[in-house]
Image (cartoon, rainbow, N blue to C red; front, side):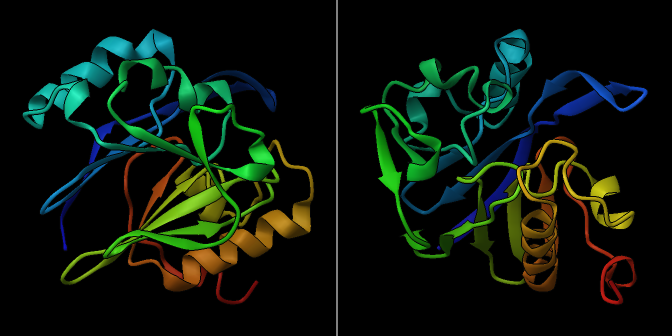
Length: 197
């Protein structure tokens, strides 16, 4: 049973004239009765605030026993090396090295925590769907990079197929009570931003 979902580091994107200048992913902690799950680890440049976020939750890197990467771009994996005790998971399309468990289909990780393939940004992008007592969280990675992407119905700026990316955004929005985007804090989606699209 999931007891909490908490953004421990709020990532961001910095663009100028539609050119991406800087990107640091959000990192999210999911706590169950027996496990500590971390989704994405941001960049090496944000190592100190990531560790501060863990510390504020009363945890050290060795307390994380499952690490899920929504995809393997460096702004989401920069601090993976801190979590030496964790089972690491990534989709097979991301071509992870032998240190990862390769995920090939939608799957339950633990009761209340499921992986959902949400390609578009990358072929192996996946989201983490978390059921708590009263809400369904979708930790979307760059399937929904920012709240603005959903509210303006724009696919990720970096994508291999716009229509595939928009389909993944729709599937996330249809099931989520709360979305944790790849770069930003958790938010409740407004159906008026995507229902008529």
